[in-house]
Image (cartoon, rainbow, N blue to C red; front, top):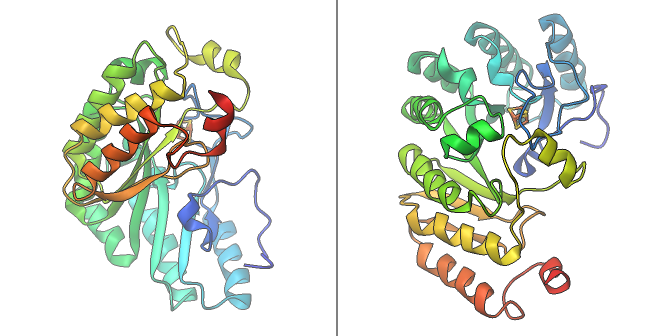
Length: 296
Ligand code: SF4
């Protein structure tokens, strides 16, 4: 979209795969906003936007771009809205954009706790086809240390409801989240959680420190010793070894990743494990980003 008639409440984030989607902010910020590693919405005070403001933005955009095909509902967890309000907005989007094919949103597992499978099916029927969920880790100890406000069980329960409804999910795990000390349990328990969920899409990205490592450590409820690149690769390997996914598109191609992996799990699991092994033993020959060459 070259020109947008919407004045966004910045900063606005969206998944890479929503680069060409119209972004509509249903909420500002994240209703949780406490995760130790996340600075996305710390500058914003969470609020739900009035429906008339949202409708006015949809109207303005539809006048200029009536052929919009994809819409991403922002900010951090638009799924926190009641099903009734989500239905109202999505139905309005359908009315104004007759060629709409997909609506998606970020969600956190607690947003889905009180939504029934039937409600999720209703949302799917009107066009909510995909939700993005940062699981971060499946390890309960680490979930507490990063102050995620979830457990492995709350995550599994919510995500299984999503799967049952037919809405697709794209989930994310953070490589290196527990540093050296928690690497093994992070890898193993994260794999167990994704096994229980069987998401359609899974990605891993590497923990980064936008405000510096000391800032992260001050928010992390435990000891943190960062993994080096070799440690990150070994953690990734352990995770993939235990992951038993039947039909999941896997990506580790976010800018933070050192080794780019892409494939379908389980079909391409052996190939990807080989790529990790190759990177571990011959870093100069592997498909590693420049940082590897410079960093070790
Ligand atoms: S729930 Fe998501 S958006 Fe909110 S603070 Fe945690 S990681 Fe950030």
